[in-house]
Length: 330
Image 1 (cartoon, rainbow, N blue to C red):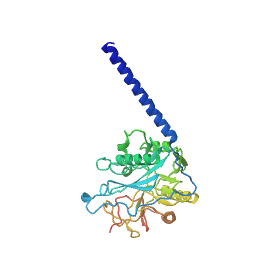
Image 2: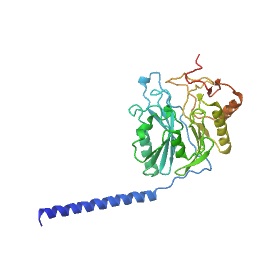
Image 3: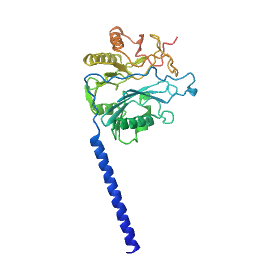
Image 4: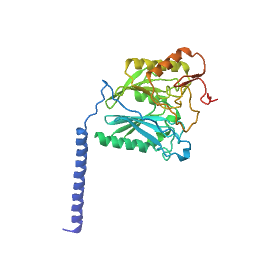
């Protein structure tokens, strides 16, 4: 046997071994997928969860802050709430990560684009990796979506554009509505299947003309984004917000609601008193979650307010067609 023939046979043998190894790998992945237990997200009952006793809230000296850039809190095993460090950006925006079978959805991407300052993608990848291991859910697809189209909620969207196995919902009104299947914004109420987890989605303009509210029937959380939270409710379209807030009340009438969750905290724990705009240290914050009683107070306000201005309530301020730069600070 000459040297050429010997090398050719060795190459054939090596190629055969590689082919068998690849086939076994594909088979193993397929078998793993078949053996993956399906997660259940029943609408009956309620998947309970917990909020932290206190969120990270900045520090007196932003330069000396030692908190993580992104606080990660597991509300329950399939629901995560994240908060941006206020020492990095005063907005201190909240973000949400919902898991279903084979899929996760990230709602909003914070106020800071730099991965060096705000490594959101790295944090999300780590959460997904741990979740996949814990629940035997390989190859989880990520959907990157948004509550509305203001820059303090999609700044880190760019960190995900080259991420594999990821759906990027576009940053235009048309792309947002097409993804959710909303043809008649804002009136239409649609149901979205997130891997067996049912989300009810509808338009809630008033703060911004593409805003959405999401009701999660598994946890009974009603997500209201920027149109209703403990802070300054900046309303560009009063009539649209009136319709939206009353619609939320109707949704809550038809569905059990454990908490209303949202995007910011700007109030202090003293009724009716907010932190000044741009505050990077809020040691006296109230909880982020809100109650149906607070929603009822907002609904009642829609019958009392009839002109532009700033209106003060215990848990929120209504800035009716008043620029955000105006303040109640004395």
